[in-house]
Length: 195
Image 1 (cartoon, rainbow, N blue to C red):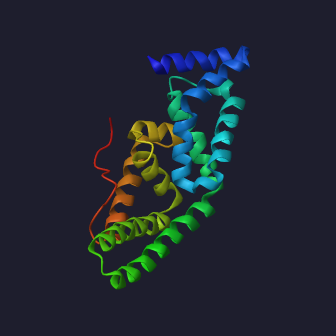
Image 2: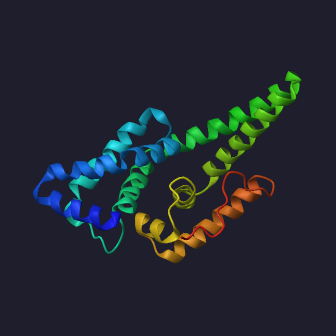
């Protein structure tokens, strides 16, 4: 029902632009959280705002049969994150380096609790490094599934790629992540997430 209501709001906003505010109110926090997890807090508000500006400007091209408004917004957000991709990759690599440095500190700390916390952070850092090493397309698919919890069909619509491409990119990315993490896949259970 929400999808139909959202589509109606987009249609109405073509004649009454202020109606688009309902879309902003409904999805800004979710889109902002996704963008922040991708590129960090420094630019997240700007990129999230740019997402809604781009959607507002292209609202006359929205096709409800192709994607829900939520999925459509994730497409804009992911494309804008792509413009900030160098920053995203730098941030992921920095997390990987910090995790490596934290591991050497843990050996000196002597506290089991501290060592456990730092080991978890190290795993997260290794994950960041592994994500940074993925191709942009593979990383986009993984993060739309893991962070935005989009289905394969929604990812295909958001990125404007074939459904089968989503599966192949996700499988390739999972394999590379597992290899980089020594056979484990922490924080990301990307088994068939097609709901």
